[in-house]
Image 1 (cartoon, each protein chain N blue to C red):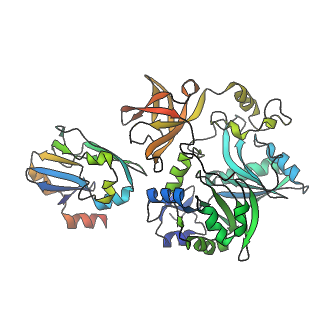
Image 2: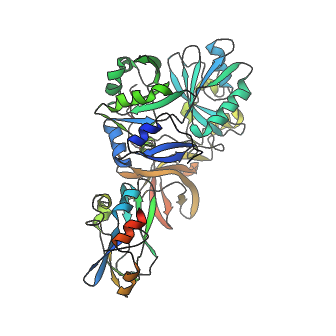
Image 3: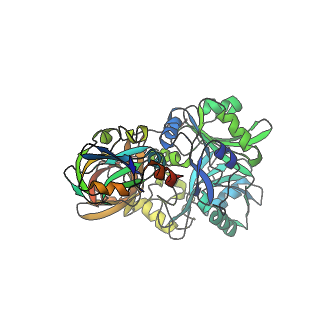
Length: 373
Length: 119
Protein backbone atom coordinates (compact mmCIF):
# COMPACT_ATOMS: atom_id res chain seq x y z
CA UNK A 1 0.00 0.00 0.00
CA UNK A 2 3.08 2.23 -0.48
CA UNK A 3 1.46 4.63 -2.97
CA UNK A 4 -1.48 5.26 -0.66
CA UNK A 5 -1.71 8.39 1.44
CA UNK A 6 -2.26 8.35 5.18
CA UNK A 7 -4.29 10.73 7.30
CA UNK A 8 -2.89 12.35 10.43
CA UNK A 9 -4.81 9.75 12.47
CA UNK A 10 -3.11 6.72 10.85
CA UNK A 11 -1.03 5.79 13.90
CA UNK A 12 -4.03 6.16 16.20
CA UNK A 13 -6.14 3.89 13.94
CA UNK A 14 -3.46 1.22 14.00
CA UNK A 15 -3.04 1.50 17.78
CA UNK A 16 -6.81 1.05 18.14
CA UNK A 17 -6.68 -2.23 16.21
CA UNK A 18 -8.11 -0.93 12.96
CA UNK A 19 -8.10 -3.01 9.82
CA UNK A 20 -6.75 -0.61 7.20
CA UNK A 21 -7.88 -0.80 3.57
CA UNK A 22 -7.32 1.31 0.45
CA UNK A 23 -10.11 3.85 -0.06
CA UNK A 24 -10.05 6.78 -2.50
CA UNK A 25 -6.24 6.77 -2.50
CA UNK A 26 -5.88 6.59 1.29
CA UNK A 27 -5.25 3.86 3.83
CA UNK A 28 -8.42 4.09 5.89
CA UNK A 29 -9.88 2.08 8.78
CA UNK A 30 -12.69 -0.16 7.50
CA UNK A 31 -13.34 -1.46 11.01
CA UNK A 32 -11.83 -1.68 14.49
CA UNK A 33 -11.77 -4.64 16.86
CA UNK A 34 -15.48 -4.36 17.70
CA UNK A 35 -16.52 -5.04 14.08
CA UNK A 36 -18.97 -3.43 11.70
CA UNK A 37 -22.19 -4.51 13.43
CA UNK A 38 -21.22 -3.34 16.93
CA UNK A 39 -19.73 -0.12 15.59
CA UNK A 40 -22.93 0.63 13.72
CA UNK A 41 -25.14 0.03 16.74
CA UNK A 42 -22.80 2.01 18.99
CA UNK A 43 -23.18 5.03 16.70
CA UNK A 44 -26.97 4.69 16.82
CA UNK A 45 -27.00 4.28 20.62
CA UNK A 46 -24.13 6.45 21.87
CA UNK A 47 -21.46 8.28 19.85
CA UNK A 48 -19.09 7.21 17.08
CA UNK A 49 -15.88 8.96 16.04
CA UNK A 50 -15.02 8.85 12.33
CA UNK A 51 -11.86 9.95 10.52
CA UNK A 52 -12.98 11.69 7.33
CA UNK A 53 -9.71 13.53 6.76
CA UNK A 54 -9.45 12.01 3.28
CA UNK A 55 -12.23 14.34 2.16
CA UNK A 56 -11.30 17.59 0.47
CA UNK A 57 -11.53 20.89 2.36
CA UNK A 58 -11.48 24.02 0.23
CA UNK A 59 -11.79 27.72 1.03
CA UNK A 60 -13.39 29.90 -1.64
CA UNK A 61 -12.79 33.62 -1.23
CA UNK A 62 -13.84 36.40 -3.62
CA UNK A 63 -11.02 38.63 -4.82
CA UNK A 64 -13.34 41.57 -4.05
CA UNK A 65 -13.46 40.43 -0.42
CA UNK A 66 -17.27 40.23 -0.54
CA UNK A 67 -18.90 36.92 0.39
CA UNK A 68 -21.75 37.72 -2.04
CA UNK A 69 -19.31 37.63 -4.93
CA UNK A 70 -18.00 34.23 -3.86
CA UNK A 71 -21.59 32.99 -3.54
CA UNK A 72 -22.58 34.21 -7.00
CA UNK A 73 -19.41 32.73 -8.49
CA UNK A 74 -20.11 29.32 -6.94
CA UNK A 75 -23.72 29.50 -8.18
CA UNK A 76 -22.34 29.28 -11.73
CA UNK A 77 -21.22 25.71 -10.89
CA UNK A 78 -24.06 24.42 -8.67
CA UNK A 79 -27.88 24.49 -9.08
CA UNK A 80 -28.19 25.65 -5.49
CA UNK A 81 -28.90 29.02 -3.87
CA UNK A 82 -25.60 29.97 -2.23
CA UNK A 83 -26.45 33.68 -2.04
CA UNK A 84 -29.27 32.91 0.41
CA UNK A 85 -26.96 30.87 2.64
CA UNK A 86 -26.69 32.93 5.82
CA UNK A 87 -23.47 33.40 7.74
CA UNK A 88 -22.94 30.46 10.07
CA UNK A 89 -25.03 28.07 7.97
CA UNK A 90 -24.21 25.13 5.71
CA UNK A 91 -26.10 23.38 2.92
CA UNK A 92 -25.80 20.45 0.53
CA UNK A 93 -24.83 21.19 -3.07
CA UNK A 94 -23.93 19.47 -6.34
CA UNK A 95 -21.35 20.28 -8.99
CA UNK A 96 -23.10 19.60 -12.30
CA UNK A 97 -21.57 19.08 -15.75
CA UNK A 98 -22.69 20.33 -19.17
CA UNK A 99 -24.73 17.18 -19.68
CA UNK A 100 -26.69 17.81 -16.49
CA UNK A 101 -24.92 14.98 -14.66
CA UNK A 102 -23.39 15.26 -11.20
CA UNK A 103 -19.61 15.75 -10.96
CA UNK A 104 -19.61 15.55 -7.18
CA UNK A 105 -21.77 16.33 -4.19
CA UNK A 106 -20.50 18.59 -1.44
CA UNK A 107 -21.23 20.70 1.61
CA UNK A 108 -20.97 24.48 1.40
CA UNK A 109 -20.70 26.64 4.54
CA UNK A 110 -20.84 30.42 4.85
CA UNK A 111 -18.06 31.26 7.29
CA UNK A 112 -18.48 35.03 7.22
CA UNK A 113 -15.82 36.28 4.83
CA UNK A 114 -15.44 33.06 2.81
CA UNK A 115 -17.18 29.87 1.73
CA UNK A 116 -15.89 26.57 3.10
CA UNK A 117 -16.44 23.50 0.91
CA UNK A 118 -16.14 19.84 1.85
CA UNK A 119 -15.93 17.53 -1.18
CA UNK A 120 -15.52 13.79 -1.73
CA UNK A 121 -12.02 12.32 -1.47
CA UNK A 122 -12.08 10.61 -4.86
CA UNK A 123 -13.21 13.82 -6.61
CA UNK A 124 -11.22 16.45 -4.77
CA UNK A 125 -8.42 16.96 -7.32
CA UNK A 126 -10.95 17.29 -10.14
CA UNK A 127 -13.18 19.58 -8.06
CA UNK A 128 -10.30 21.91 -7.20
CA UNK A 129 -9.18 22.03 -10.84
CA UNK A 130 -12.79 22.76 -11.88
CA UNK A 131 -13.17 25.56 -9.31
CA UNK A 132 -9.86 27.10 -10.35
CA UNK A 133 -10.47 26.94 -14.08
CA UNK A 134 -14.02 28.30 -13.84
CA UNK A 135 -13.72 30.85 -11.06
CA UNK A 136 -10.12 32.10 -11.32
CA UNK A 137 -11.19 35.58 -12.50
CA UNK A 138 -13.24 36.31 -9.40
CA UNK A 139 -12.14 33.97 -6.63
CA UNK A 140 -9.16 32.49 -4.85
CA UNK A 141 -9.47 28.73 -4.43
CA UNK A 142 -7.42 27.43 -1.51
CA UNK A 143 -7.25 23.69 -0.75
CA UNK A 144 -6.85 23.22 3.00
CA UNK A 145 -4.26 20.45 3.29
CA UNK A 146 -2.99 21.07 6.81
CA UNK A 147 -6.29 20.36 8.57
CA UNK A 148 -7.83 17.00 9.46
CA UNK A 149 -11.58 16.34 9.46
CA UNK A 150 -13.37 14.13 11.96
CA UNK A 151 -17.04 13.41 12.59
CA UNK A 152 -18.69 12.65 15.92
CA UNK A 153 -22.12 11.12 15.37
CA UNK A 154 -24.89 9.71 17.52
CA UNK A 155 -27.36 10.63 20.26
CA UNK A 156 -24.54 11.18 22.79
CA UNK A 157 -22.45 13.30 20.39
CA UNK A 158 -23.65 16.61 21.82
CA UNK A 159 -22.99 15.66 25.43
CA UNK A 160 -19.61 14.15 24.55
CA UNK A 161 -18.31 17.07 22.50
CA UNK A 162 -19.74 19.59 24.97
CA UNK A 163 -17.44 18.22 27.69
CA UNK A 164 -14.55 19.63 25.62
CA UNK A 165 -16.31 22.47 23.79
CA UNK A 166 -19.41 23.59 25.74
CA UNK A 167 -20.58 26.02 23.02
CA UNK A 168 -21.52 23.21 20.62
CA UNK A 169 -24.71 22.47 22.57
CA UNK A 170 -26.15 25.74 21.26
CA UNK A 171 -25.64 24.82 17.59
CA UNK A 172 -28.54 23.58 15.44
CA UNK A 173 -28.50 21.16 12.51
CA UNK A 174 -26.41 22.66 9.66
CA UNK A 175 -25.02 25.50 11.80
CA UNK A 176 -21.29 26.18 11.42
CA UNK A 177 -19.05 28.01 13.88
CA UNK A 178 -15.45 28.35 15.03
CA UNK A 179 -14.83 27.30 18.62
CA UNK A 180 -11.67 26.57 20.56
CA UNK A 181 -10.26 23.74 22.62
CA UNK A 182 -6.93 24.01 24.41
CA UNK A 183 -5.72 26.72 22.06
CA UNK A 184 -6.78 24.85 18.92
CA UNK A 185 -9.28 26.43 16.52
CA UNK A 186 -12.05 24.04 15.52
CA UNK A 187 -14.23 24.67 12.47
CA UNK A 188 -17.38 22.86 13.54
CA UNK A 189 -20.60 22.07 11.70
CA UNK A 190 -23.58 20.32 13.26
CA UNK A 191 -23.98 17.76 10.50
CA UNK A 192 -22.74 14.39 9.33
CA UNK A 193 -23.60 11.47 7.13
CA UNK A 194 -25.16 8.85 9.38
CA UNK A 195 -28.71 10.08 9.93
CA UNK A 196 -27.78 10.89 13.53
CA UNK A 197 -27.30 14.18 15.29
CA UNK A 198 -23.63 15.04 15.43
CA UNK A 199 -20.78 17.22 14.30
CA UNK A 200 -18.02 17.44 11.76
CA UNK A 201 -14.88 19.11 13.04
CA UNK A 202 -12.05 20.49 10.94
CA UNK A 203 -8.89 21.12 12.96
CA UNK A 204 -5.14 21.37 12.43
CA UNK A 205 -3.68 17.98 11.50
CA UNK A 206 -1.04 18.47 14.21
CA UNK A 207 -3.73 18.50 16.91
CA UNK A 208 -6.19 15.90 15.65
CA UNK A 209 -4.66 12.91 17.48
CA UNK A 210 -4.77 14.46 20.94
CA UNK A 211 -8.26 15.89 20.32
CA UNK A 212 -9.48 12.47 19.13
CA UNK A 213 -7.88 10.79 22.14
CA UNK A 214 -9.68 13.25 24.43
CA UNK A 215 -12.99 12.27 22.80
CA UNK A 216 -12.19 8.55 22.89
CA UNK A 217 -11.38 8.84 26.59
CA UNK A 218 -15.09 9.44 27.16
CA UNK A 219 -17.07 6.27 27.89
CA UNK A 220 -19.70 6.94 25.24
CA UNK A 221 -17.28 7.48 22.32
CA UNK A 222 -15.88 4.61 20.23
CA UNK A 223 -13.97 4.75 16.91
CA UNK A 224 -16.02 3.73 13.88
CA UNK A 225 -14.74 2.53 10.52
CA UNK A 226 -15.85 2.94 6.92
CA UNK A 227 -17.76 -0.37 6.98
CA UNK A 228 -20.23 0.89 9.57
CA UNK A 229 -20.29 4.32 7.95
CA UNK A 230 -21.60 2.79 4.73
CA UNK A 231 -24.54 0.98 6.36
CA UNK A 232 -25.29 4.03 8.55
CA UNK A 233 -25.58 6.34 5.55
CA UNK A 234 -27.60 3.76 3.65
CA UNK A 235 -30.13 3.38 6.49
CA UNK A 236 -30.34 7.19 6.46
CA UNK A 237 -31.10 7.13 2.70
CA UNK A 238 -28.01 9.21 1.89
CA UNK A 239 -26.35 8.60 -1.45
CA UNK A 240 -22.66 7.91 -1.94
CA UNK A 241 -20.97 9.59 -4.89
CA UNK A 242 -19.36 6.99 -7.15
CA UNK A 243 -21.93 4.37 -6.12
CA UNK A 244 -25.35 6.04 -6.21
CA UNK A 245 -24.43 9.15 -8.19
CA UNK A 246 -22.07 9.64 -11.10
CA UNK A 247 -21.34 11.98 -13.99
CA UNK A 248 -24.31 10.64 -15.96
CA UNK A 249 -26.86 10.93 -13.14
CA UNK A 250 -28.91 14.12 -13.03
CA UNK A 251 -30.14 15.65 -9.76
CA UNK A 252 -33.75 14.74 -10.65
CA UNK A 253 -32.82 11.13 -11.44
CA UNK A 254 -30.97 11.11 -8.14
CA UNK A 255 -34.13 12.29 -6.28
CA UNK A 256 -32.20 15.35 -5.11
CA UNK A 257 -34.73 18.00 -6.18
CA UNK A 258 -34.89 19.16 -2.56
CA UNK A 259 -31.34 20.50 -2.94
CA UNK A 260 -32.39 22.89 -5.75
CA UNK A 261 -34.11 25.96 -4.34
CA UNK A 262 -36.93 27.71 -6.23
CA UNK A 263 -34.77 30.74 -6.95
CA UNK A 264 -32.59 28.60 -9.28
CA UNK A 265 -35.54 26.89 -11.01
CA UNK A 266 -37.59 28.10 -13.98
CA UNK A 267 -39.25 31.39 -13.08
CA UNK A 268 -36.85 31.99 -10.18
CA UNK A 269 -34.88 35.22 -9.81
CA UNK A 270 -31.59 33.42 -10.54
CA UNK A 271 -32.97 30.73 -12.82
CA UNK A 272 -30.41 28.43 -14.42
CA UNK A 273 -26.91 29.71 -14.98
CA UNK A 274 -25.25 26.44 -13.92
CA UNK A 275 -23.79 23.66 -16.12
CA UNK A 276 -26.46 21.37 -17.58
CA UNK A 277 -29.26 23.81 -16.69
CA UNK A 278 -31.28 22.99 -19.79
CA UNK A 279 -31.68 19.31 -18.89
CA UNK A 280 -32.01 19.86 -15.15
CA UNK A 281 -34.63 22.64 -15.40
CA UNK A 282 -36.63 20.55 -17.84
CA UNK A 283 -36.50 17.47 -15.62
CA UNK A 284 -37.55 19.51 -12.58
CA UNK A 285 -40.80 20.26 -14.42
CA UNK A 286 -41.33 17.05 -16.38
CA UNK A 287 -39.51 14.38 -14.41
CA UNK A 288 -36.78 12.01 -15.57
CA UNK A 289 -37.15 8.52 -17.07
CA UNK A 290 -35.40 6.81 -14.15
CA UNK A 291 -35.25 7.60 -10.47
CA UNK A 292 -33.28 6.68 -7.36
CA UNK A 293 -35.50 4.84 -4.89
CA UNK A 294 -35.23 2.90 -1.68
CA UNK A 295 -35.76 -0.86 -1.97
CA UNK A 296 -36.55 -3.37 0.77
CA UNK A 297 -35.80 -7.00 -0.17
CA UNK A 298 -37.99 -9.69 1.36
CA UNK A 299 -36.19 -12.08 3.71
CA UNK A 300 -32.69 -11.60 5.04
CA UNK A 301 -30.46 -11.81 1.95
CA UNK A 302 -28.93 -8.43 1.04
CA UNK A 303 -29.25 -7.26 -2.57
CA UNK A 304 -25.96 -5.57 -3.27
CA UNK A 305 -24.75 -3.16 -5.97
CA UNK A 306 -25.28 -4.59 -9.45
CA UNK A 307 -28.37 -6.65 -8.57
CA UNK A 308 -30.78 -6.46 -11.52
CA UNK A 309 -34.34 -5.31 -10.79
CA UNK A 310 -37.23 -6.75 -12.78
CA UNK A 311 -40.92 -6.06 -13.34
CA UNK A 312 -42.16 -9.33 -14.78
CA UNK A 313 -39.60 -10.37 -17.38
CA UNK A 314 -38.39 -6.85 -18.08
CA UNK A 315 -35.25 -5.50 -16.45
CA UNK A 316 -36.18 -2.02 -15.24
CA UNK A 317 -33.22 -1.08 -13.10
CA UNK A 318 -30.29 -1.97 -10.90
CA UNK A 319 -29.23 -1.71 -7.28
CA UNK A 320 -26.42 0.81 -6.67
CA UNK A 321 -25.93 0.26 -2.91
CA UNK A 322 -27.15 -2.60 -0.78
CA UNK A 323 -26.35 -4.03 2.62
CA UNK A 324 -27.86 -5.55 5.72
CA UNK A 325 -29.08 -2.78 8.02
CA UNK A 326 -27.97 -3.51 11.58
CA UNK A 327 -30.57 -1.11 13.02
CA UNK A 328 -33.29 -2.23 10.61
CA UNK A 329 -32.36 -5.87 11.22
CA UNK A 330 -33.20 -6.37 7.56
CA UNK A 331 -31.54 -5.92 4.19
CA UNK A 332 -31.94 -2.61 2.37
CA UNK A 333 -30.87 -1.23 -0.98
CA UNK A 334 -31.06 1.84 -3.11
CA UNK A 335 -30.98 1.86 -6.86
CA UNK A 336 -32.29 3.30 -10.09
CA UNK A 337 -35.50 2.07 -11.70
CA UNK A 338 -37.81 3.25 -14.47
CA UNK A 339 -39.93 6.05 -13.05
CA UNK A 340 -43.11 4.22 -14.10
CA UNK A 341 -42.39 1.68 -11.35
CA UNK A 342 -41.03 4.07 -8.74
CA UNK A 343 -44.17 4.58 -6.61
CA UNK A 344 -43.72 3.64 -2.95
CA UNK A 345 -45.09 0.18 -2.26
CA UNK A 346 -44.54 -1.18 -5.78
CA UNK A 347 -43.44 -4.83 -5.55
CA UNK A 348 -40.65 -5.79 -7.96
CA UNK A 349 -38.09 -8.57 -8.12
CA UNK A 350 -34.34 -8.54 -7.67
CA UNK A 351 -32.14 -11.27 -9.14
CA UNK A 352 -29.72 -12.72 -6.60
CA UNK A 353 -27.49 -15.59 -7.70
CA UNK A 354 -29.86 -16.43 -10.55
CA UNK A 355 -32.97 -16.43 -8.36
CA UNK A 356 -35.68 -13.79 -8.42
CA UNK A 357 -36.67 -12.51 -4.97
CA UNK A 358 -39.37 -9.93 -4.16
CA UNK A 359 -38.41 -6.42 -3.14
CA UNK A 360 -40.60 -3.39 -2.46
CA UNK A 361 -40.04 0.26 -3.36
CA UNK A 362 -39.78 2.09 -0.04
CA UNK A 363 -39.46 5.64 1.23
CA UNK A 364 -36.10 6.77 2.53
CA UNK A 365 -34.67 7.22 5.07
CA UNK A 366 -35.25 3.59 6.03
CA UNK A 367 -35.27 4.71 9.65
CA UNK A 368 -36.11 8.19 10.97
CA UNK A 369 -33.14 10.55 11.18
CA UNK A 370 -32.35 12.26 14.47
CA UNK A 371 -31.16 15.69 13.38
CA UNK A 372 -31.38 18.52 15.93
CA UNK A 373 -33.27 21.13 13.95
CA UNK B 1 -11.09 -32.61 12.53
CA UNK B 2 -10.04 -32.07 8.94
CA UNK B 3 -9.72 -28.74 7.15
CA UNK B 4 -9.99 -27.49 3.57
CA UNK B 5 -8.21 -24.66 1.79
CA UNK B 6 -11.63 -22.97 1.69
CA UNK B 7 -11.59 -22.69 5.51
CA UNK B 8 -14.12 -25.42 6.18
CA UNK B 9 -13.82 -27.94 8.99
CA UNK B 10 -15.08 -31.53 8.76
CA UNK B 11 -15.87 -33.72 11.75
CA UNK B 12 -16.72 -37.40 11.31
CA UNK B 13 -19.79 -38.30 13.36
CA UNK B 14 -20.72 -41.97 12.89
CA UNK B 15 -21.49 -42.49 9.21
CA UNK B 16 -21.91 -38.79 8.42
CA UNK B 17 -19.52 -35.84 8.16
CA UNK B 18 -20.44 -32.52 9.80
CA UNK B 19 -19.21 -29.41 7.97
CA UNK B 20 -18.76 -25.81 9.14
CA UNK B 21 -16.37 -22.89 8.70
CA UNK B 22 -13.33 -22.20 10.82
CA UNK B 23 -12.99 -19.52 13.46
CA UNK B 24 -10.42 -17.83 11.21
CA UNK B 25 -12.94 -17.71 8.35
CA UNK B 26 -15.72 -16.35 10.55
CA UNK B 27 -13.43 -13.61 11.85
CA UNK B 28 -12.39 -12.68 8.32
CA UNK B 29 -15.99 -12.58 7.12
CA UNK B 30 -17.13 -10.26 9.88
CA UNK B 31 -20.66 -10.25 11.25
CA UNK B 32 -22.73 -12.83 9.36
CA UNK B 33 -26.24 -11.62 8.53
CA UNK B 34 -27.62 -14.32 6.23
CA UNK B 35 -26.96 -17.96 5.44
CA UNK B 36 -28.48 -19.85 2.53
CA UNK B 37 -28.33 -23.62 3.04
CA UNK B 38 -28.63 -26.43 0.49
CA UNK B 39 -31.65 -28.73 0.21
CA UNK B 40 -31.38 -32.07 1.98
CA UNK B 41 -31.13 -35.20 -0.18
CA UNK B 42 -29.06 -33.24 -2.71
CA UNK B 43 -26.15 -35.07 -4.35
CA UNK B 44 -23.11 -32.80 -4.41
CA UNK B 45 -19.65 -33.07 -5.94
CA UNK B 46 -16.50 -31.71 -4.38
CA UNK B 47 -16.17 -28.01 -5.28
CA UNK B 48 -19.90 -27.39 -5.89
CA UNK B 49 -21.05 -24.09 -4.44
CA UNK B 50 -23.76 -25.19 -2.06
CA UNK B 51 -24.12 -22.48 0.62
CA UNK B 52 -24.01 -18.70 0.59
CA UNK B 53 -22.85 -16.66 3.56
CA UNK B 54 -23.58 -12.95 3.57
CA UNK B 55 -21.69 -10.86 6.08
CA UNK B 56 -21.86 -7.12 6.65
CA UNK B 57 -19.01 -6.94 4.16
CA UNK B 58 -19.76 -9.30 1.28
CA UNK B 59 -21.22 -12.57 0.03
CA UNK B 60 -19.10 -15.74 0.05
CA UNK B 61 -19.73 -19.31 -1.03
CA UNK B 62 -19.23 -22.55 0.80
CA UNK B 63 -18.30 -25.42 -1.47
CA UNK B 64 -18.85 -29.12 -0.97
CA UNK B 65 -15.58 -30.36 0.57
CA UNK B 66 -16.01 -33.92 -0.74
CA UNK B 67 -18.51 -35.89 -2.87
CA UNK B 68 -21.68 -37.05 -1.17
CA UNK B 69 -25.28 -36.41 -0.23
CA UNK B 70 -26.60 -33.63 2.03
CA UNK B 71 -28.55 -35.41 4.75
CA UNK B 72 -29.24 -32.60 7.22
CA UNK B 73 -28.85 -28.81 7.34
CA UNK B 74 -28.66 -26.51 10.37
CA UNK B 75 -31.90 -24.54 10.17
CA UNK B 76 -30.90 -22.57 13.27
CA UNK B 77 -28.55 -20.54 11.05
CA UNK B 78 -31.46 -19.18 9.01
CA UNK B 79 -32.99 -17.60 12.11
CA UNK B 80 -29.76 -16.71 13.84
CA UNK B 81 -26.92 -16.25 11.33
CA UNK B 82 -24.85 -14.57 14.07
CA UNK B 83 -24.18 -18.07 15.46
CA UNK B 84 -21.50 -18.36 12.76
CA UNK B 85 -19.52 -15.67 14.61
CA UNK B 86 -20.39 -16.83 18.12
CA UNK B 87 -19.66 -20.54 17.82
CA UNK B 88 -18.29 -21.39 14.36
CA UNK B 89 -16.87 -24.79 15.25
CA UNK B 90 -19.76 -25.85 17.49
CA UNK B 91 -23.39 -24.82 17.18
CA UNK B 92 -22.90 -23.13 13.82
CA UNK B 93 -22.32 -26.26 11.74
CA UNK B 94 -23.78 -25.84 8.24
CA UNK B 95 -24.71 -29.30 6.98
CA UNK B 96 -24.15 -33.01 7.41
CA UNK B 97 -23.11 -35.19 4.48
CA UNK B 98 -23.16 -38.89 3.77
CA UNK B 99 -19.78 -39.35 2.09
CA UNK B 100 -19.36 -41.96 -0.63
CA UNK B 101 -15.65 -42.42 -0.28
CA UNK B 102 -14.30 -41.59 3.16
CA UNK B 103 -10.75 -41.81 1.78
CA UNK B 104 -11.39 -38.38 0.19
CA UNK B 105 -10.95 -37.00 3.70
CA UNK B 106 -7.37 -38.26 3.83
CA UNK B 107 -6.35 -35.62 1.30
CA UNK B 108 -7.54 -32.81 3.56
CA UNK B 109 -5.41 -30.91 6.07
CA UNK B 110 -5.10 -31.70 9.74
CA UNK B 111 -5.18 -28.91 12.31
CA UNK B 112 -1.44 -28.23 12.24
CA UNK B 113 -1.37 -28.01 8.45
CA UNK B 114 -4.37 -25.67 8.47
CA UNK B 115 -2.82 -23.43 11.12
CA UNK B 116 0.36 -23.26 9.04
CA UNK B 117 -1.70 -22.23 6.02
CA UNK B 118 -3.42 -19.31 7.77
CA UNK B 119 -0.29 -18.03 9.52
